[in-house]
Length: 93
Image (cartoon, rainbow, N blue to C red; front, top):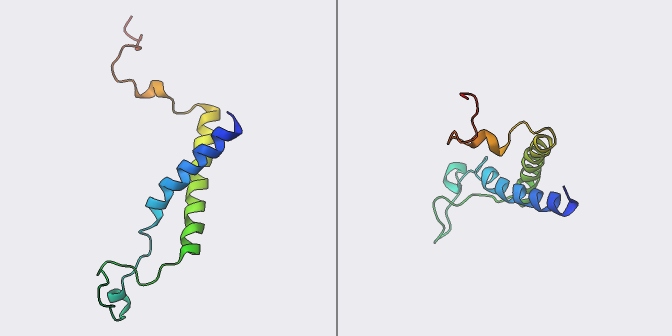
């Protein structure tokens, strides 16, 4: 696999992981006991910590990407495992 492919796939894993990590530990202003600002949504987070979120996303994305690379190298799960049509199944011949 080319290094450009590796970087591109890692960026995709990182972008996907953002959506997995964003809800972790979110507390609204009402849950914290603070006062709402006029016009603020009830579901808005009380404190948005970009650095902490970026660290969490990087850890999750790197873990998932390493699993992907190991699977790519050893071939544990391949596209042939998801062929449910039976066209390539020669076990009954």
